[in-house]
Each structure stands twice: as C-alpha cells, then as structure tokens.
View 1 (cartoon, protein in one colour):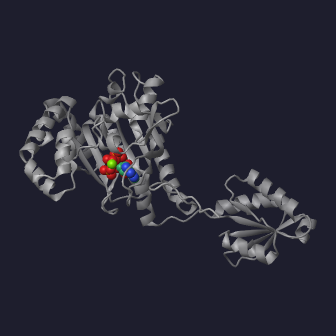
View 2 (cartoon, helix red, strand yellow; view 1 turned 180 degrees about the vertical axis):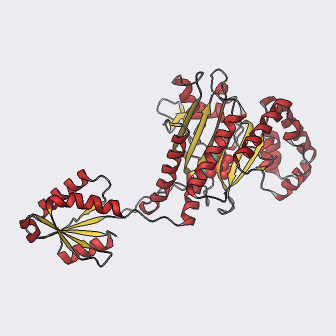
View 3 (spheres, protein in one colour; view 1 turned 180 degrees about the horizontal axis):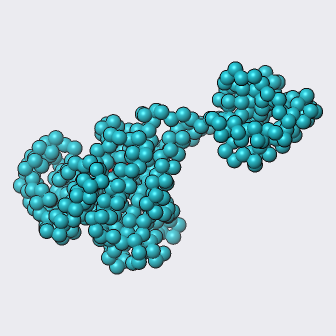
Length: 424
Ligand code: ATP
Ligand code: MG
C-alpha cells in the first residue's frame, strides 16, 4: 500500500462544516458591493510574471521572496497571483475599461505567496477586493472606506480599528525615502542586519518593523506626513473630514506604509486585536501611478483587499452561525419505493427551489433509515412505505417536535412543504 498524499504545506482544505462562514462573508460582500454599484470581475490565477514585477515592484517582499514563479513549457516566466490588483489593472487596460466613466469593480479568489505558514498566514489564501478607477478626489477615498465599514457592520464585526495615513505623491515619497534612509543609516550600528538590508533596499518598509528596538528608534525618525505638500495635505484633510461626516472612526498612524510600492496618498488598514499577530484583516490605498506602471496612460485608482481566512476566523469566534438546516429526509422501503422516492424527490425539488431534501441511499430497514434521518439533522421525515405508495400518499413525521404525524395525498405534498419552509 502506498501512503496517501497530503496537501502542500500552507495550502488548506476548506471543509464542509466551515463553508457556511465563508458563504456568509461572500454573500454580505456581494450585497454591499452591489449596493454601491461595484461589478464583479474575474481574472486568471496565473499571469506573466511581469504583471506583478512591474506593479508591485521587485524590491518588495512579495515579489522578491514570496511569488510562486516558474517557466512554462515555452520558457516564459509565469506567476501565480500573489494579490489581485495587478491582474485587475492588466485586465481593465487590455479590455478597454479605463479612460471613460468611473469604474467600480470587485473580485474574490485565491492568492498565493510563499510565506512561512502560521496562524492567519497561509500559502494559498483568499481575498475579496474592490478597485475604483477614474476618480482622483478624496470623495472616492471616502466611498471606498465606507464600503469596507459597511461590510463590517453587516457582518457584526464591531471591533475593527481603522488606521489611516497619507503617503503623498510619488515625488514626496521619494524625498522622504532619502530623508528616512539617511536617518536610518546614521543609526546603522543600532540596527539588526535584516533592518539594515531593508534600509538600503526599501527603507519605508522599516516603518512597519516588529522589532522593539527599531520601533523605539523610529520615535525620533522623520515623519512622512511632515514632508507632504499642500495638495497632498489637503487631500488627506478632506478624507478625514468625510470620514468624520459619515461617523466612521479612525486612527491616524503616521508610520502606516503598505508593503506594495504602488500606493500614494491615502493608505489604510482595518485591524483586529482578536487574532494575535496577524491582525490586519483588510488593507488598501490609492494607487494613481499603477496604471502607468502597467503600461497605460496615467489613470487614478484606489482599492483594498481583505483576507478571507482572517475574517472567517473572526466570524467563527462569534460562533452564532447555525449550519444550514436539512428540511426533510425521504425514507422509503418496500416494493416500488426506490422509483416512487426518486420521482417524489425530483418533483418536490423542481417545485420548491429552497427545499433541502435528502434521499435515502443504500436501502435499509425503516429503523436504519430513521436513524440516518435523525443523524442528517432533518426536521422532517417524508415516508414512503408500501401502504403510502399504493394509496398515492406520503406520511410526514416530525423528527424534532411532538407534533402528530400527517398523511398527505401525493399531490398535496408540494404545497404543504412550501408552506412549511416559509413558516420556519
Ligand atoms: P501582512 O502584513 O499580514 O503580511 P500584507 O501587507 O502582506 O499583510 P496585503 O498584500 O495588503 O497583505 O493583503 C491584504 C490582506 O490579505 C491582509 O491584510 C491579510 O488579511 C490578507 N493576507 C495577506 N497575506 C496573507 C497570507 N499569507 N495568508 C492569509 N491572509 C493573508
Ligand atoms: Mg505579507
């Protein structure tokens, strides 16, 4: 006997008992997006590697360390998508969806990053994201932030903290980058090797270091917010004003940068304290230079991506989710019962789309079948014995209450079951 094959490290199965949490999240997101006229877009999981190196930047961890890249049979470098935005930008450019009216899009699906698997961090993970193209103003930023906020309240996730910051324009960020770099270089001796390497490669990334010594040093580091020009300050000011107007609470975090290079102006994260170290459930920002990086004429954009695993974990912790109920289990035994049951189930399902009905398979006595019905969690047993079949009837037994058994004519069952489903 060979041993069974296991899944790849960091790539998890989502088992049936968990799927209900995922669906709650997906359905709520779909409704929130629809209410602001965001349309879904679906792009490939696999793209030319360049889609990501151009957009995300080769100095980032995502591109330099985390991508699943390989040469295909023609020797072309392809990568599994590590995030959604780059591919969406590739798609909207390719399909001529830009340079006209505002485009509001959302996506959902798996992403792949070769990271160290741990709680809240896997190698195949799933995101839902939104992207808004063609609106450079702070009102668009407020729209996107309101979208996230509305989703959390729909899901009953009341303890998420919104942190915001402004990264200004690319030029302002470049100037700040130099300033920060010289500051950090002056403290080289106090910093660990990894941080010193970051100082050279991607100094802004040092700002979200987890190392206490680095954090302490950053207290005295120059702040990006102090380097912003008037227009950037004004943009940021307005975003905050709109959030105040909407009653959306936020914390300004002047050290909030994002891991990806393409962000400018407003960046933000929603964070929970309930998941330990991996507390960011949703992150995003404005990316006005991304379309140009991908080879298009400049066009503004802003968006966010949320980690579904982390949100599902929060929903699971709330634990007020009942698994979907099975309405009825069809018990059938005796001559002609297989045919009779097949037909009844087929007709009931056709006539009552909301019905969750389980057919009995593998035969068995009435006793065995009632045991299975009980284990299935069904509220009702629909019973077809020889007597019911020859009388053109169906018996209904209530499995979870003391209500008396009913006998219905076969042509009454559909109406009865519809009324029953409506009443529960
Ligand atoms: P982190 O700092 O946690 O690594 P990130 O900045 O790399 O996050 P983004 O690229 O902004 O993450 O992705 C948005 C969201 O997707 C994150 O806030 C998180 O909820 C989720 N996410 C990112 N990477 C993973 C992963 N490896 N496993 C599970 N969820 C993830
Ligand atoms: Mg990361």
